[in-house]
Length: 388
Image (cartoon, rainbow, N blue to C red; front, side, top):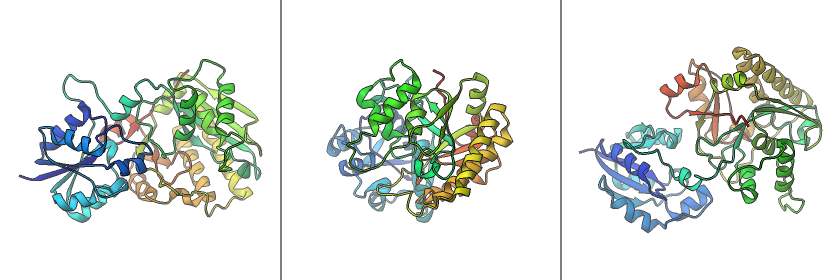
């Protein structure tokens, strides 16, 4: 009988975990690595609901599990010491838990790497720990499409320009430190933990921006306005910056045909989160020509989206990311280049970028057709733009 290994937190144990164990056990005797309390605190920045020994007891009690261990390592690869103990033939992961680092590790060790889609047991509702914790939270997140970084005055002082964001419904796990403005979203939760209030979106965005950037904030960092705007203002929005923290003007698109067209061409691939202490501003090289390139790409991107011109959109989308990286080359540090190398060669992928500051998180792709791409690549996350 082959040995099969899976690894995870398994906090708030639910039917989705049990079904995953059942599916994995079909490959052989199942061994489970469990993230320690310390690892989860460092990786996910919150304490567990159940301590590690209680989680170990629950996982070991599931009939599909041959044995389980508390992982002695740390970070996203905390399972390595457990692998050395179990010596498995097969490593099974969920699609949203897959990473290039895990795949490469298995290749080096001669371990078969299997990716399963997250599917519920027959007749049951799909579950995830995040769903359970956030089941009442309807707060949107945001995806920056083009021009971002120009919302910082130390960039727009060289040349003014637009940033483009779209507000997303949280139909997927909004992971921390992954470029989807979770720090701003978490600040909003302190005031409105369930949903945004029904008020003028632009005024709401400015309230959130001012709340997050409290003058008593000790780190001296001013979060870009595009985070608050992208979360609070529905649809597709562009905002114009000229050496100020708050934009001079806005333009919004809520046209259903345009938004549906955009949803059919943009998806995300999960990567590893940005490492703690990672600084994407180190080595920055901001000049007037580079900022003008960023501004032009954002203009071209907006016009292409409104015209639903796929070739022009892909070209401008890529040009915007290239302009960002030219100014902030550290955006592609860590695992990022490996993911770009893997997905950029696919014939159905026409452009790519990272949301937020980069350094990890998600890789955003422009593809021929999202649904077709997701059938071939189950790790791909389909997006839903918030309409109101």
